[in-house]
Amino acid sequence: MENYYDPAAIPLPPNFAASHPFEHGNLTGRDERLLPAPRTGAAVREELALYYAMITDLDREVGRLLDALPALGETIVIFTSDQGLALGSHGLIGKQNCYEHSIRSPLLIAGPGLPQGKQSGALVNLQDLFPTLCDLAAITVPATVTGRSLAPLLRGETEKVHDYVVGMFTDTQRMICDDRWKYVTYPQAGREQLFDLVNDPHEQHDLGRSPERAGVRNRLKEQLDRWRRENGDPLEP
Image (cartoon, rainbow, N blue to C red; front, side, top):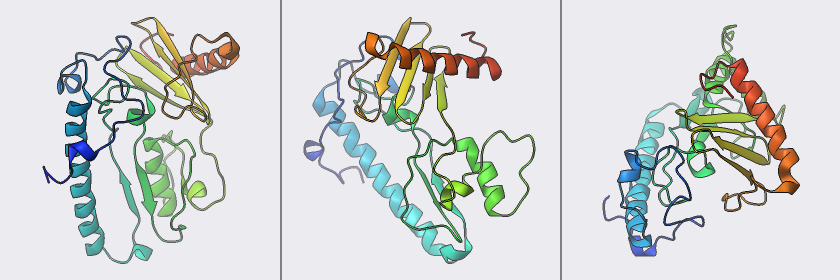
């Protein structure tokens, strides 16, 4: 699979950058050392070609598993993964960041009684999968579980599961986003970011210092600080 894709034919990410504008907490981490900095388009394309080849290989192997299973009408199938690599986006290579290209995970669910080919933009967490499987299998969800079942969403009974979701990395990054806005704080770097995910899906325009968006920034910051206190974040907000 190594030579499956021609690097020269692969477009760079729309938010490709030679370097990240500030120390986000992992610029010298393992993944960031995979390519020299500043990044070059040629080097990133080589990595993307390998990445896409691995995805193609994985897709084929998942297909083999599905072919070996009973009919999907009798089986619940969930496909998900860890977060994705940045591979040149925002000048980063690894997944240790809170940008969309890395904080999101793929999530596909198929099974008895579930609609086919439906997509949802609802905010969900991977910890929602346990209560979801309990729900779909008609098993009582333990009272200690904090995730929420996605079954009502899958069945079209609701369009929302969470009002917001949060993310973090070590003691250097904290993030919260709702259906439109994302706020990121970097406690060690003393930086904040705010992105309009509807009008700026590739997060190329940081509104963290925009006076016009101060209200949005402060609202999300308060929500994030409250969540951190309620969930025992060792890094005091």
